[in-house]
Each structure stands twice: as C-alpha cells, then as structure tokens.
Image (cartoon, rainbow, N blue to C red; front, side):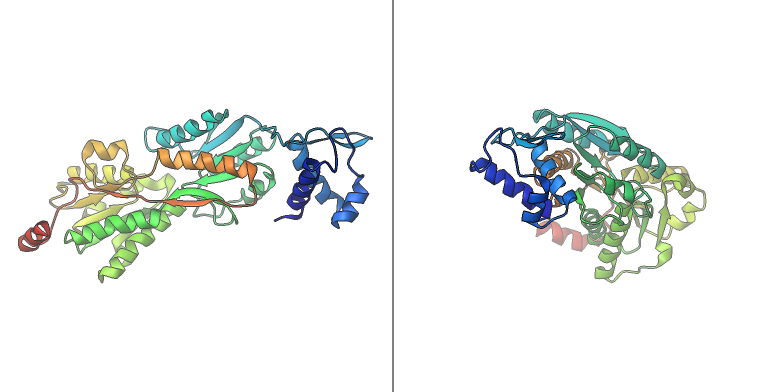
Length: 360
C-alpha cells in the first residue's frame, strides 16, 4: 500500500473513532509530516483523498477541518470511453455493455474515437487532462508499436484507466479486460487440424497486440500438431495497408493451402469475396475462419470465435468503478472466446474416420 493511502486510511479511522470530531481542526502539516515520517507532498496527497471523500475541508490560511465522519465520495459523473472505431462491427455491443453498468450507477458516457491513429489518441488524452471525467475505458492504439503517448497516461493520476482489447507494452501495472486472443486463434486452428487440414495459412495484423497474440496461438497449434511453420505461410498487414493484401498475386499464395486463419471477420469476409472473384470455392477449395463472431460472420455463415462484446463492456465498466474505490489493486481479466462452427470450413478427414468420430 502506498504511503499516502495508508495515511488517508489512518486519519479516516481516527475521524470515525472520534479522535478528530466534526468541525475540529486536524494537526498542522509539519506535525502530521513528523508523525508519519513523510514529505509534505505525500501528506497533501493523503489529505486530498479525504477531501475528495468529503470528510475534510482545507481552509486557506486556517487549516484542515473535519466535515463528516462518513466518507461520501464526491464522484464526477462522466466516464470517457475511447475506442479505435465505432461502427457496425463489435464496438456497439461493447459500448452497450459499458453503458448498461455506468447508467445504473448514475454515470454518463463520453465517447471518443482514435481511428487507430496515435496522434488522435494523443489529442484525446491531452483533452482529458483538463476534463472532469472520473474514469477512462480505452482501447489502445497500434499497441504492437512504440507509443509516445505513454507519458500522458502517467499524468492521469487519480483517474482510473481500464484498457480493453489491447494496450501498449510500454505501460506497466495496467488494468485490462480483454478477449483471450491467443486461445481464440489456437482454438480455431486446432479446429481446422481436427477437420483434416494440414496446409494452413494465416493472415494477421502486425500493428496491434491482438494480431501478435493470435499469430502466436496459430503457430502453437501448428507446432503441437507437427505441421509446417514456414514464414511464407502467413502474411501481415497494418491498418493503413490492408488493401495491399488483396492483389492478384494473392491467388497463387492461397493455392498452397486448404485453409486460412484470418485475423478477424472483416479480413475473412474480404478473403471470401476475393476467392469468389479468383475462381476459388469456399470451403471446397479453401476453408476460411475469422475472429469475433460479428454480424458479418452470421450473414455469410463464417466459422469464427465469439468475441465477448457486451460482456467485455460490462466488466470493463465494473472494473473502472472498482478502481475508483481501490486504485491500488490492478484488475486483469481475459475472457474466453468459444468456437462458432459454420459452413466455411470443409471436413477433409477420410470418410471412415469421419463416421467413426460421429459414432463416438
């Protein structure tokens, strides 16, 4: 426990016990500093906690007075939610879960978008420094790359921050609620292997941490099955160059495989449309899988894994509320992403083996 928290809790208990009655004056700063063996700045942090709770009031030139025996947190009524995008993909579900919890607790939600641009994230964070938001739920921007905004996060002292989906590796001791990207990609790759696929390609995003974790899950599933892991078997893209993937040369690359694991449903749907134009049938010639179980996946019958969506939003909102009361204990939750099997995966197992599996 940090020293200023310990001091605040000690003084709070003394106020409750009547050591310092309502309207009484606390000892002057030098006396309290000497008692707790801390610098004046640390003591002022502790008094600030009690002031935020409404237990004491600092009077300029007079001192600090007890105003209440019971903490009554003077919470500000807005939580900022900052995501990369807000469209008809998974984001509306996440926001719905966030608002469900926060509105029940009397909080408003302030939306901010970054469009996955570090400069926009920076501008939004700087604006938050002078705002009265009582908490921040944020999806990190390009989290696989160096983020120069790390220093700004460190200035948001007193404002609880909960990351969703991804966060910069430069940040330490963060609180987060995220889908289990590694396990999700591993699960869908193992599903393809169980269906008899042995030549499995992959398409992953390299500028966010989700893409790296999904790539790792894919590789570990191949490794455990003893399947080839040639670097030519997977392709990378970034936010700005995704269109470069779908060039005519992609057709020849695809013909090596019986299946491809895609970074998300958006990429999977684009790949299926590309295959249609290139004369490749899905799943007869190429099985395709996604990630997120979005509306897109439902519309075309895509095999994918289910992003927790609204549940992730609810848990993130609960986490930011919990951090308002206990900022010293980070909250870290990885949520399961179950397989959703649909028609875009062919079963390549020998008929006898398939019948045996069905009979079992």
